[in-house]
Length: 233
Image (cartoon, rainbow, N blue to C red; front, top):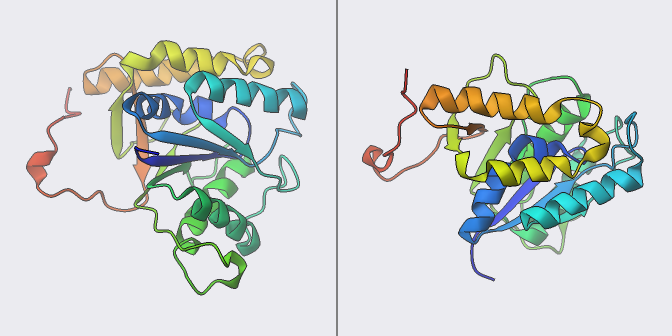
């Protein structure tokens, strides 16, 4: 298999699609291999059932061209930041061997699972490279090159470290979000996400944009390699 492996982790069905799907769609179009790892089936949600929400996520993944797997951590609203749970995600990282991992932002927000998933992923990326962890034997160690965090539905008060023009994949993004019919029929999630992307896009001089937050400094060979600018206003 050619191309780079990219792993996107979300605590619930739809988090990845709402929070970073345009970035994944662009990478898939480029020839990279994307896998979505979902840590629950939204069992505590007021709309949809666990089975229907899983099917919605699988439909979105098919539309995007991504693979998708689900893990069980006692269900929605029960995700705990523990070493044992981190080891389980680290095992998935060792199996898939991604160069890039995406996870929700670590800042506390409207759902505790978002923060737990972020911290578990951050730990798991570290655990995956430690050869002495018996819990991860006999899987070979793996070093993740870059860990980035994405916002799900928070658009106020955040200044992303990396901004990507997503204007060319807006139709595909909307289609992926619309796969989650049980969620978007009750709340204006699509309008919220598109409005946030429009605002960020205007700020950098494009039609739409999406931001990421770094876990580590971004490395380049020379500063002149950075040829795009977000300084529009």
